[in-house]
Length: 139
Image (cartoon, rainbow, N blue to C red; front, top):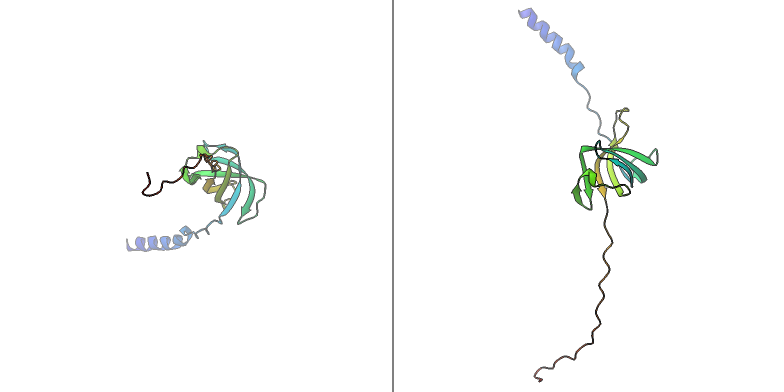
């Protein structure tokens, strides 16, 4: 019995290093600024024609993105659903490319759409003739 326990400990000691795996380095995040070209809300596919990318060099003028259930979407500083994004919207996405080469799309962590409308025009000021001010102690 004692021999079995030492054998079991020896096997565990031999296999322990095989089970440990190095932690992957964190993904390098980048920002893509562009216009929404297409959107499929059912599976979170988003295609962006970019105008600027910071953090890494972009490979193509169109970037295929994947919006996950953990992604945050904001429209005009309001937390929104993915289906509120429209084709043609100006968009900024923050995300990363997965280290797994089989995962092609840019994984979106944060998306921001700015649909701020211009301020309404100033209302016209009515030009009415001024009345003379009443003097104190007057009639």
